[in-house]
Image 1 (cartoon, rainbow, N blue to C red):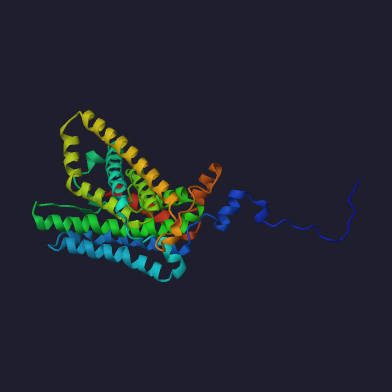
Image 2: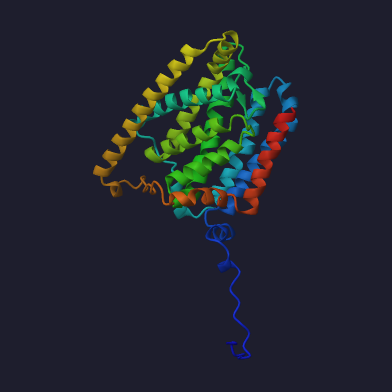
Length: 340
């Protein structure tokens, strides 16, 4: 039977409703990082890539440490300051620039050992220990230590302290605050991805992903980005003063079985101690009234995404044009590394 013609054109279904839930999330930017934060990261990536064009001139000068310090101050704190400056005051507490508590000392120590051993083992698997004779900053500036006290202090400042402060401020404090509405795990994972892209090194990607997630967890458990800065600093100091020796050991001997066993044992021990400290801090926090402390802010939920939404959510994190451009810059940096 034919349908009678009423003369009224059929109602068109909106285009958005005809798309899959994943496509709708992508277009709406549901899980995307805000444009302001993504532009900040994009500026940092761009400045780092530009620094590679001028690093040879800086490294040939006697004031190489000062040059590296000035470059880092230009690349990180200035974009971060501009972002925070225009952030609403009521949202600035989410940056977790809180004082560090003495009761968090053992968690910081265990997390530092866990980060060092875990990254070293992953570095061995990725072939980094055989190819990297010294600690490098963004795979551009190589640390050189002549053994004097002055050189050691400059190394600590330029390659240890300043990178830890700058990177944690941007990738843990700011980015996690932007992403934590979907839970701690999502904020940790996406901020770790942006952090891993910062180094423009495809081979070391697992190392930076592991370190990024661990550093974010340290910040959330302690509710202070200062804690993750200290853990990051400890790892940088290990890279400056110990990593070259381990690299030399890996090159000079064909058998590193004992070293691997020792690293695995230390990783398991530090992981157990870290988990125990996390449980202790959370139990203590549950028994206390946090509303009496104005410096404390609430911790977001662990995970607010169903397991099936995770792949789609991670893709949507880079849904904005600025996010896509950040990935393009990372690929450009990786290509430049491969052809150097």
